[in-house]
Image 1 (cartoon, rainbow, N blue to C red):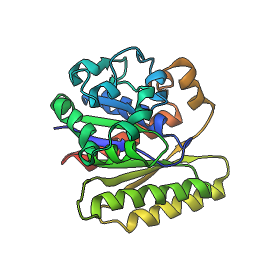
Image 2: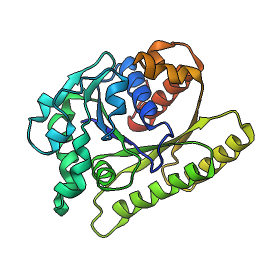
Image 3: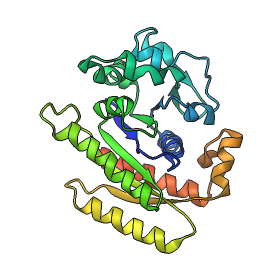
Image 4: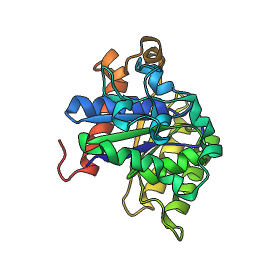
Length: 257
């Protein structure tokens, strides 16, 4: 049965799509069977790996318009279920309480084919986020070091807590880790890193805290539609994401690879 990991944050521009693609690529290179679900209506993950936007997509899967198996497409890096702008309709079309389980039900159909399923989320804490949290076993939260980004980490966790600790306990997901994008302002980065470590220490499962160095090379991945871990093997960022993938494996399996 696949381990399900949602990459999520309320704030945009903190590296959710990059983290999803790079982690998935490294998990696959290490030898795992990996599926990525692009659950962001903007579809950045799909485009960034040269996915087929005309292919059957996740909206059609949760709407039961197309069998889930037919929505899976192969990329050069991992299997993918692409996004659709129609995901913007979810809050209006799926209004029954049980609809929060739709993504979970889609994943159940195919999860035996994979070791890991990664879910890339839109920068919002609405219905799509709730579906993702209900479907996930773990959540990884990327962030920048500024105050707004760090506040969004706390807001993301507050919504997750309501789902996991509420009367109905719709979600069992736990925070697996934080990924801080390291900018040139070293002092600000150090403060944010320390704050994330404090937050991690307060949790029973002690999530990992990692950083990834931001730079021009990361922007090149969108131009060439290849992960940095493929485009620039051996680069600082590629090594950092490889280390994160290893940490994920260690924490989600009995033995590390």
